[in-house]
Image 1 (cartoon, rainbow, N blue to C red):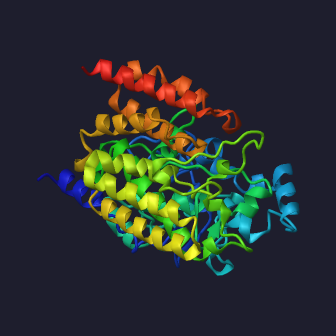
Image 2 (cartoon, one colour; image 1 turned 90 degrees about the vertical axis):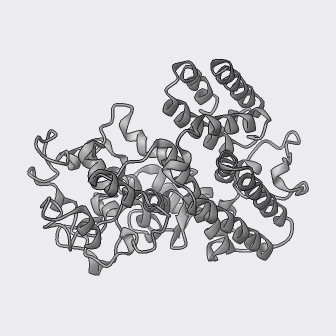
Length: 438
């Protein structure tokens, strides 16, 4: 086995334990500030550098192309001021509940001399406090990537670790969560899918702040888009279930935390009866609100592509979770724990090799689920589209790619989403896929 393949194998054993890596917001290192990365010979070059294993213009790319750089500034706009007023906050720019996701809000004792909250979601928000690795991480090959990880650099190349990091804000955890109360005050609904959101910065004219080349693969390994999607999906599902199992689900009053439920199950017109249950809802009766399950529906398709037994286990666990919604909070938590166990078992067996060559099977599972009308709710459809788009591009089939724009247009406004139209589009895509592979 070559050095490269040994390195890749070690880094791709995602397994997917990230317990040893504290999230950057929780690490013990001093966060030195974005300015400490911005020297022209480090990451502040105006143009990509030559003869380096990194681009060296990462700081400029971040300031110009990455919305994370403006996350703090957004707290001062009119919309944020209105949200803060509705929540009874003096200012969104000073409220912990806002700063925790809109900037690198580490405790005062862990802020270096050049640290500024106004920098927004900067380098150390994702890569961890640089106190112990700032002066050595560029000294390669004398200092290896593994040595930097040991010194506190956050392992963003580890898919599960990256997913947990992103989801700490794009979903929330037991320390911070965009609750139903916050959304009711005007905060946008949160949506996320790891592979899609990672690749957003490689499209629409934006420049990525890192390049996946031979050197990157040597040091950090390489994974497919399908694996990134699958591992991110299961990490999100498990984190969502952890929120249900934990104190966040208690809510602020007589109701459980409604931010973990399907928004569109309640926020739709009252002029006609639209409530409808699917088999995955486990026989829950009218009026029972459904836990947001777009991630779990995709996990069910993923599991079926791996084995029928895995698919049955996820389907059974999801039905039990919905059915428990008609009982009480403890029943929901118990069902969440059971489904969490199923997803953890599936994730522990997930590997790049297991998914290689299954892209078409995955696509067929997702399209068949949609053609049968299972994406009644907008969030499930949104997750399905991101998965379909990833798989079609991964399969590199121009005939199928030509249909993606129309499907995307059907999702451009959640209030105008029509399940029957979406199902018909997926059925058409499935028919083309079938004809193209006869």
